[in-house]
Image (tube, rainbow, N blue to C red):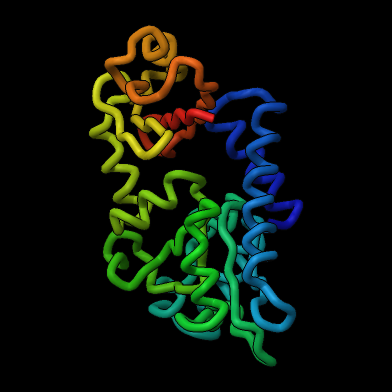
Length: 245
């Protein structure tokens, strides 16, 4: 991601978790590195082009209004998010294109073959998902955008890929997993949902989990170093991911 996008990612994570500057700076670097590593593996000069990353509200508003004038309301509301509803404003999304003499800024070509498809197939390994698929349009409210990738982190990208869930569905699906009683287990990860409780939500589950091996940490050795990531779901609670390092 561009420095501006990476900075927005840092601010977003800090805002929704309330964690320290130092801790979430490390997550910013990991997200940025994921993009850079993916590009190093699959991008060759003249084959994949970055079209759009972070956008300000002003930029999103201009894009939306220009598209209304040029393409009409039906097209615009299908392929362009309203201001303050675009993932680009979070700094977590990017649009890519097959590098051609002319690239459509709204609907860039990112075909399902060649280097573009290899990028798509490897994206989840680096925490990215193809965000808007044809079969999920009624759920996301956005038309098919094979060029648009969203960073959700690992292991979530891999789980979404395996289950075939859109982000909206995935967030709802995770609510069935109580981290202290019935967590989602994925390799060395334990994942669960905690409902928000007023302005401040206190969760003491990790201490309890570390004291008993019969809950979500079963299968993880007592000597393992644990990493806990807390992410707000922008609705009613938090997704907690515990990884054994």
